[in-house]
Length: 374
Image (cartoon, rainbow, N blue to C red; front, side, top):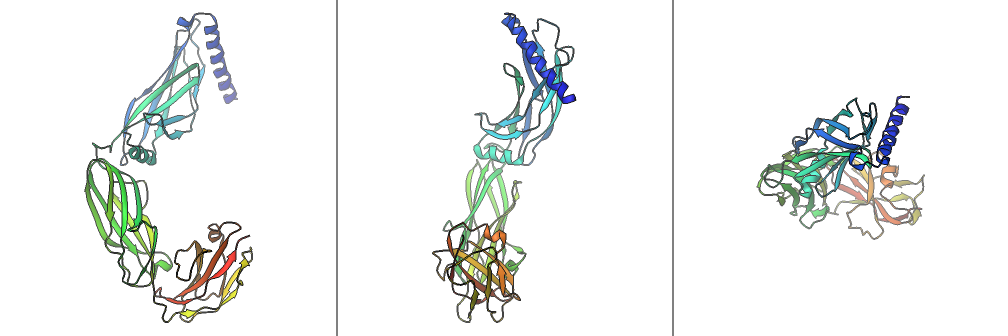
């Protein structure tokens, strides 16, 4: 009932304003104006809003009595850059009911997303605009609050983007035992200050389950003026064969994302690796809902990894498309739904079984077999 009444009042306002203009008195036609208090706000990655705003709608120049009880509605608020690029939408509608003086207000608690601030800094925008339109054009008014973003080139440091890769710009690496490799963090920033971060590594055997990261080296860099800086890790550990993770964690300034992770593997010597005999599925089989991968046990295996590669993979290829771990006591497994999401329909792949011991050393490996998705 209340919604119906509000809608009726809104329609009545539009009808009344239309009637005023129809009198042929454009100079005296009703004028809708909107204001917002406060009109200027500040935010940064360290200190984003929420804040309380008051939106006021005022209607003037009526030739009849003031429009008591009429309602003007704003369907949403928009956060835009000065050149008009929309970075955030506040979908909550606000309604203002006019009093006897042709004026009314509504209070809003507005929240600015840290991701919006980060994107503004990435675009080099030092100011954002919060806009709301109340009413329906031509009987509408717009108000704008200005949000000053600290962390621009002349302000304190703020980080908008971090990307990791190895020195060859790959996102995955396979290296030999003892081989040297480094990771590189590309950091986009604005402002000036000290970037405090840390390189961390998770080594086997922890990477067989819940990875345990330990500090590798601190990364403390003094940056100025905004732009891009590259931070290189120390040589990554490569003593034990198996899977590794390297993580770059920014400690300060605050960032709206978690530590970023790269994966690399250290290859082992094939000497002493037991060939694993595969029982099923057969070569060139089709992956069905009930397909189970079955193999003969490998001596000393603490876990098995079912690995899936693209159709052009060779026996030395270590870049998996999908796969899953199986405990050492199992001799067969069905491919999980999560693992299947990485496979396309109607395509050929190659797969194999790899056995590792409790020290994450490879102790067994099957040949590569072809399988096709329906």
